[in-house]
Length: 138
Image (tube, rainbow, N blue to C red; front, top):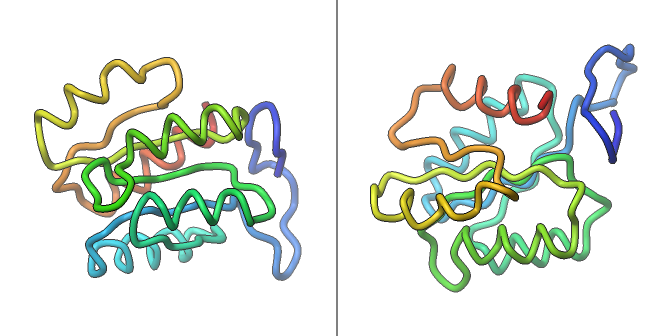
């Protein structure tokens, strides 16, 4: 796994080694656990945050992340504010946003230079797993 440049999953994995370290910021607990479980089954190390403020704390106090997967509409600090802060402080970390609201998706369109993609909700497990894989391998 590389912290800068392109993510590669070609390197052999040893016991306890993860494919990617992912920060998942989502205020809906059931959805957060569902997505987290799926990404862990794919071999990723997933850290969960219940809102953007907790996500930003995780970024600042963590050991580095390959990807931020964040809902846009959250209390305290939304995903767009989290994306701006992350892009400024951690420019090598890829960002993938999720939303179920058309107006939030339109609001995030201006972030195209810092956000890899915006995944519409609802999504299926194959949809979100595929989006994560594409973002990591971009």
